[in-house]
Image (cartoon, rainbow, N blue to C red; front, side, top):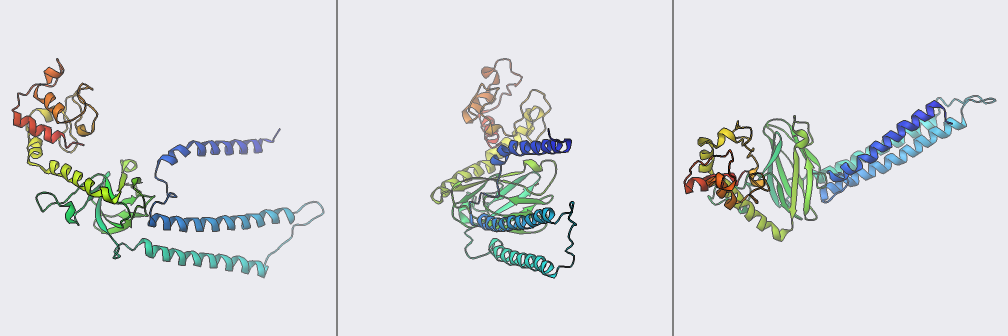
Length: 349
Ligand code: CUA
């Protein structure tokens, strides 16, 4: 049987291994720094692996020498521990080699940083603005004509997801509305702080189409952990189709009908019961929160699905006909009022 000390040590090691193994699935799902899918991330990963390899070699040599010396020169019966104080050759070796290593790392990092920080090079193909707000990112595309909306003066703005074309160098201009946030999509690029009152930027580029996850990396309050980033890289020939769809969505948001619907929602009884975060805080306990109603799979407890124009009309125009006995009253709305309200509800995603 092992002595108590060894048994305790084995127990601690076993617990650590179990903790490590059980966290692997969580790591596999989240953003992972060593899965580079673009030039900036690849540059950072290269630097990481060079330094990691050097660290492993240093660890092996230093710990190897330590263990060897500890066994070979230790004090034991018939043998007095040897002293090596003031050994010039050794002192010089472990001063000069680390100095050369650290200087090389600095030069290497400097070179790579030149590439990583080159956000204004002539090869930038696109500029997107990202604003950090407690606790989400808003993406706007105010720099290019193809993002101009119908009115001719406003651009696609305030989108919740970041959409880029594959193989294009994209500069992200960062700003923050309230506190310091940090933009980080590890598979594509480095991280950069978004600081209130200060302009910062970074660039990234995706090699392959796909959805890449990111995370705000500066603790910014209660919702920091949920301040995620979803970046979608589209094949170049599909990007125009995405722009068109996003513009239709934005037009709907800016439309006269939606604006009227918003006003109606406030002035009619709706806002007394239903909550729409950022607009109203309804008080009726049974009334569903409508903040993201357009993203839901169904309404009226699953009776009407999907959440589209036809079903919202049916429900609002005559709730009792859909669900007899429901607490939702028939407000006797006009056709136009129903249209306006539905247009407003459809933008609540
Ligand atoms: Cu924003 Cu953390």
